[in-house]
Length: 273
Image 1 (cartoon, helix red, strand yellow):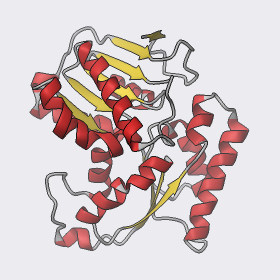
Image 2 (cartoon, one colour):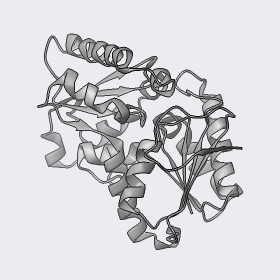
Image 3 (tube, one colour):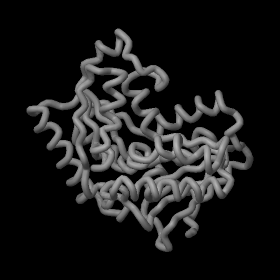
Image 4 (cartoon, rainbow, N blue to C red):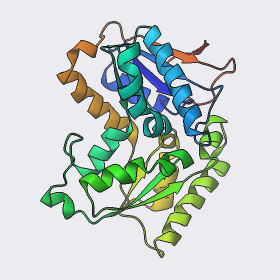
């Protein structure tokens, strides 16, 4: 059983992609809707809530948990892997969504810390759209700097966007928010478009078409569902002990008694825990 954890419903974008690519794999998804969003919380609260979520999933039999929340991955993943996991669930594993994105953007595998000659030739200007906490963590910029030091990364926090998506806001308010954030980036680039964009929040693929429309069709967008799915598929090839292929069961759990607003591709109904 593979667990997927998110602060709310954003990780469902990743789960849908995983389910499509691995139809016989069993998944349990946990959305911490009662505490969402995480983007404005303290680091201490993010670590505590993330560990609680991982613990719930592993208690349900998940040997592998994916943090499908960039804020959790940026703030809590290292602590969870290095200080918590071995003492609590030895032999289990925790992965995040940030690593596959950095690998995809830089073209440099995670285990390589020293930039190659080719990585020095990458002089693109990229824009990162994410939550405030993900931006403040500097996780994306730090890891990209190790692998492709000449990439310029402009990180833009997007306050209110996760709340609007979680709250089921309509086209007009969502489009207004996205266009505003994109125009702020363009202004900071002196009227120029970025060479590519990273959507550093798993909620944002829900409005990826709005980002593409605001940026224009010629600006590539790195979006997590496809990239994370490819990365997990490769990981399971090398670590088959974490596969749990059976009937392709998907279980959706939530910490809130209220129903989640984000559509989830007919995966089922949320169960409160």
